[in-house]
Picture: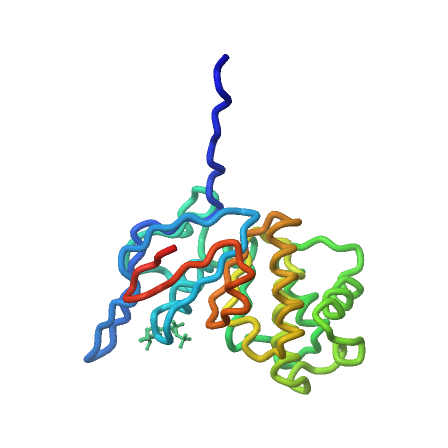
Length: 230
Ligand SMILES: Nc1ncnc2c1ncn2[C@@H]1O[C@H](COP(=O)(O)OP(=O)(O)OP(=O)(O)O)[C@@H](O)[C@H]1O
């Protein structure tokens, strides 16, 4: 009897020969060196590495914020340059930035509903969905309807997380998402990342210094001297 063939699922995100060099007037620094790595749906990844090792750079290339100086990033087998970086960011990837990047003239709810509109995320009642997600990250209705600049740093970080959750996309990137949170709130956010990967089949990639977060990820990768290793 023929044995069943096991096929590896295609990666949702592939980095091939990825290198990145920052060039200034008197300064040139190669931060990433010839990185090859596949990332899969249904998986929660943590990327660790010393300060300045290039974690944020890696995330900005993988999330389509910047283009690599060499090599390619592909989503479901298509090079991001063919998809278009703007379209990729709007339709396929949500990013939680280290500096949150919230729309400062809006409330938390409006930040979420605007992101849902941009990504074309369908919801019968976008405001109700936004309130529900903000509650999930621990923000009550009063905080959710306040201008985001009148929230604390940790509360703004949770708005940024809820905004990423509001978008129905395959890839979620996060840069130090628990950096400003107390241990209990951080544990709640880590559980949300696990649910997104395991119950909703998303690919979640988090850059962090937190050992607490890395211990809960399915795969831990380390960036050191421009190389990524498992
Ligand atoms: N726009 C830029 N122009 C020039 N050099 C840059 C630029 N952005 C980052 N770098 C340099 O690239 C290197 C990697 O920076 P990056 O922010 O990716 O590291 P990181 O691992 O995320 O650091 P941290 O853990 O401290 O946030 C650093 O030496 C940094 O100074």
